[in-house]
Length: 343
Image 1 (tube, rainbow, N blue to C red):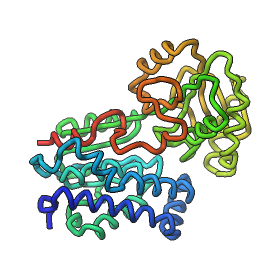
Image 2: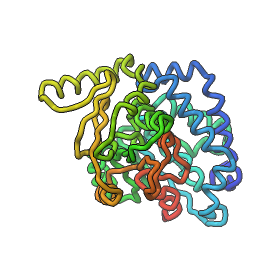
Image 3: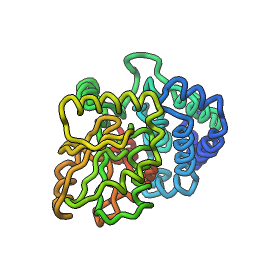
C-alpha cells in the first residue's frame, strides 16, 4: 500500500495510535534506559514527560481539531518526499514535523539529530508497525548528504541556518534557527504561579526553545519568593552535565566580577540579551506594559513564546510552555500550510 492509497482517516487514525504507544512507552524501561544512556540530558523523568505530552497531543480529537481547518481530506495534494533535518535538544522535538508530513500525505526522509537517534528510530518502527502503509514512506537517511527529496524542513542553530539557506536554495524549504522564550512578571504572582514558572525555566534542563531563558520584571521586584519556588528543581545540580555548566559560568562571573545572584543551582544575571547560557537565567527591568510590548515586538524574531499572566497577546500560561498545542508552530510558521503548498 502506498501513502497515496491511504486515505486521510487512516493516516489520522495511525497517528492517534502512535499516541497510545507513547503512553505505553512510559513503562518501557529498556527504551528509556537506552535513550538516557545515549544522551544523558534525556533523563527518564523528562523522557516520560515528553511521552505523556505527545500522547495527549495525539488524541484523535486533538488531531482532528488541528487538521480539519485545512480541509486536507478534500484537497488533492501531490505526494512529495520531504526531507526532515531534526533538532535533538529535547526528547522527540522533531516529531511534530514528521506527523505533519504524514498527515498531509507526503513521504518523509528523516535525518534525526545525533542526540535523539534512539527515540526517533523507535518512533519510525512504531509507526510502521501500526500502519504497514508507512513502510516505504518513512525512511531514515544514513547518508551524510541527503538525496532524492523535493522539499526540506530543517531545524538548527543560527550558524547551521546559513548553511541550510545556501545548500537548499533550490528546494522548497522551511528553515528554522535559534529561538528562546521569555516570561513577564507583574510582581503579584502567587507562590503557585512562581512554582509553575519554575517548570518553564527548568524542564528539560532549559534546553528547549520554549524554555524561559529571560524574565522581565518590574523595578521593585523582590526575587526571594521566585527563588524559593525554584527550589522544586534544586536536584538539577546533581546532574553532572548541568552542574558543569552552572559551575563554569559561576566561575566566569566571579572572575570577571559580574554582578549576579546565585541560589546554588541557578545564576540570575541582568542582561539585555534573550538567550542565556545553561544554568543562567537572565532578567531585565521594565517600567510599563507598553515598554514590554515594544520589547517583544522588537525581538519577535528571537522569541518562541511569552509566558505571563499579564494581558499580552498570545501569552502562554505559567507551567504550559512545554505543552504546546499542535497548531503552536515553531517560529510561527505554519508547517501544514507549507506542506500543502508544495508543487
